Length: 122
Figure 1 (tube, rainbow, N blue to C red):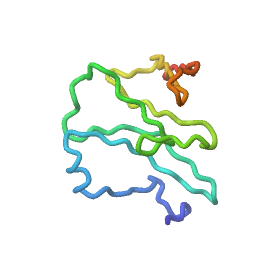
Figure 2: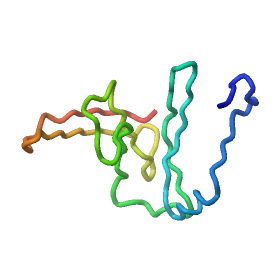
Figure 3: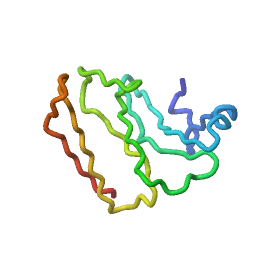
Figure 4: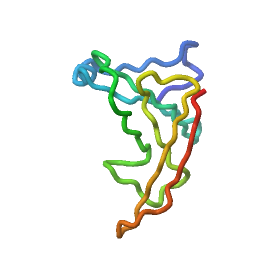
């Protein structure tokens, strides 16, 4: 636990053991942090970090990540909106338009109306 009033102006440094980093050679990691301020928890935006050589431009976009999903499962009684993180893609730039399509299916396999959301990178 860290007292925010005792932090240096530069902020807080947190070390990651070298063994953790070396284990990701030529891989990638998403990272973020959370702050609990008197019971109110806030999470930073997630960033992607390539370890070792940056891979060649991919032929396909990276898979989006659903923050509330665990091991491929999303609890249907989740509170609040579901947060989808789109990893940086090759040549990602301000002004790009990103369109998310959420296609859901009923238990029997019947498709429901898709949910669409579009964001322009600023």
